[in-house]
Image (tube, rainbow, N blue to C red; front, side, top):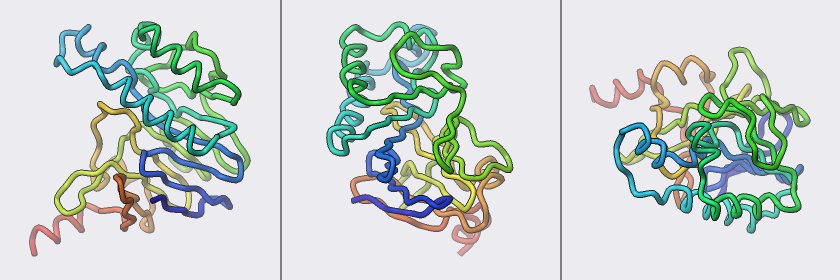
Length: 225
């Protein structure tokens, strides 16, 4: 199941995987893959996680690409957990990425975790204007027609945390696509200050759910009731 919504004169589609599809341009957009996170944590003395997030994330990305056949793929920054993770991926993962890139335009947007130019094939940009939409990593105050990531928004449904898309008249914020990414509650002050009063949340999962974006006052009212 997917959900279509209108944004800045375009029709965009939220996919269960967490990717955004712009059918008119055959453009697939994903945010915050954070490839190499388990390796980066181990390298820096953090938690030891099973090193399977690269395989899981690339498997999901491959399924989206094979199912939709995009002409363009945009990765909205923090595609790698840091610069060392970008250069330290196993040869098998690098070959996998190269196969996914073959025959299509591939754009790497710089993020705060991976700001330096990458050695991987593709176009490397700070941001990209595509028709009426501007793709960047971090939402900019006052922007219009913006598509971004960075915040890893999440909300609750039936008491369970779900990663989510957020959108209003000005911007779309994508959920993190990576397997080992956390999230920021969308009723918190950071996201509440960015999103308009009419903002909606599309909660990820096998079946997507669209709800009004939760606000802190709404959460408090529910708890008080």
